[in-house]
Length: 488
Image (cartoon, rainbow, N blue to C red; front, side):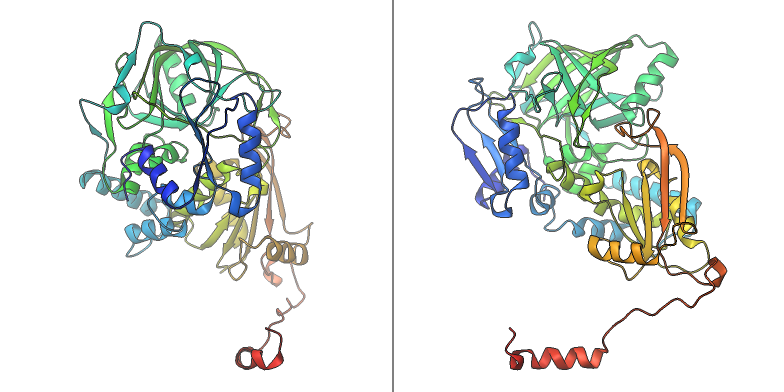
């Protein structure tokens, strides 16, 4: 289903008992974080989206933990279960999976072209709710209930903004979910890491000698648009095209009032401005999704030229920190949706899991249909060559019968089946910008572990043992007689 806007989604959550309104006055400095963190990590029955109606007397309510369970994350993207995302994309990619990288790339291009041709690309409108109020004379961030999340953060941070830029060479749009530090009422620090599309636009601007990079930050809108900003799409693929496919209808866009950009018309708040590609300022520290503070580093500065919003805006936000928190489920949606795309390049992949304990980039567990010696290593290096999976610090490959989402089963398989001298690959390469263990920024050691069954052709001359399993006949017998045993 397509939500008209964030409010439409909030209504669904409230009607389903998935939203709690908090009328007590609260502070945007640390207090909301502590409340939200307890809710995210507490009992499942208490894990609800939160609507804070009275934040620091600013008159703008704050909503948080919108995507904090698999159910709410699935609803946000128009499905009942996150696995439905995979099934929808698989149906689009069939009838036959391609063979080889060239055919996979061709198929991906055909799919994206099909989405455009059936009218799911963004559509421009002339009037928009996000521009009911326009502030260009004295736009001020101080009017917004922006959170300070953790005690040692460098300041207040916007954490759920769709950051919109265009490549100064091609004009192609990029939308990223980057944190933004409030330096003062009219400037923001833009933390786009070196592997991200926004950072590429900054590099391109310096190369062509551009003096300014137009930038806009959209808060709210259809939740599919919010999530799409976090999706690791190939360069030059419009995130709002993906959002349109998820919604089943185009994302309506409106021109900014001071910058040559377009933003989702249904957004709650839009911040417009520009970046001077020659200017940087220290940004941070920031309590990050690794569970540690990211230290201060120089990042670009956004100078604000306008703030537009609805007459009664709602401020959406999130917190990151020691997992699991809300962003884990945003990442899980990405994992489920992108499984068919991984299979385009590596058809032997059965499933994969990026568990919360690995904070997205530290651990990828993948099961494969093994067919030849060295097959697991082929998959390890193949994944290290795929988009942002190239940043994975540890890839573990298991046989197809292993449930990659059952960490106990994975640990049993790995610890019992791996010879640490023979089955481990250690290399150096790109790692996540936030990886504090790497000796160099965004570059460090990575490990691949082959936990599949081995034969003589892979250096294991002994007979590989057979797994212990009860016969199907006895399992069926015990199923039939279970109540007789008095153990129910």
